[in-house]
Length: 236
View: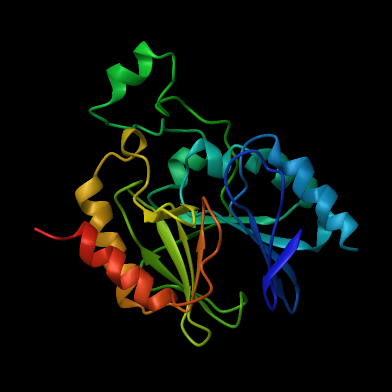
């Protein structure tokens, strides 16, 4: 568990994907839950940092893909935390509706024995849903909800305007420094054109700190780099 910026931490050795912890006055808020192996690793790292599972008060879900909610059932069980996601992602998070990935790459993935996320996930009850424009006043001094679809229908970016911090989920990735920012993997993104518009929206926020679902947080020259990336991927 490492501090990214004051009051925000990320976890290590989760196999795939990022999970973040936000230190709030009433305890901790977790953003996303990683794969199913992540839950116990997150709790172990919390304990190493002198915290207990019960210190986690909320788990925020950017979108209901396996690498973001696979660990959610176990993490919720261990912490007793409130689960919050978008209204559109709720049925998938609760295991009532399949992810419903509609991708032109589906047959290619199946031929390679890679299963696209089109099956039901193990469900976790959702305690609260949020929509565009809602504000989570109890998180990070006021965390705003922006619906940024494309990679998932109800994908959320969580935005803290005073500190200019954005948790952008999988709207974009930052996997390799020398490569820079990239779009999410096409086979797992049903509407890439819509996702490009979401990139543009995140860039318009002019973030100073950008926290990804995959890759190293962006902490320097963030606004310029995201704006340049948005211009490139949205070029006619």
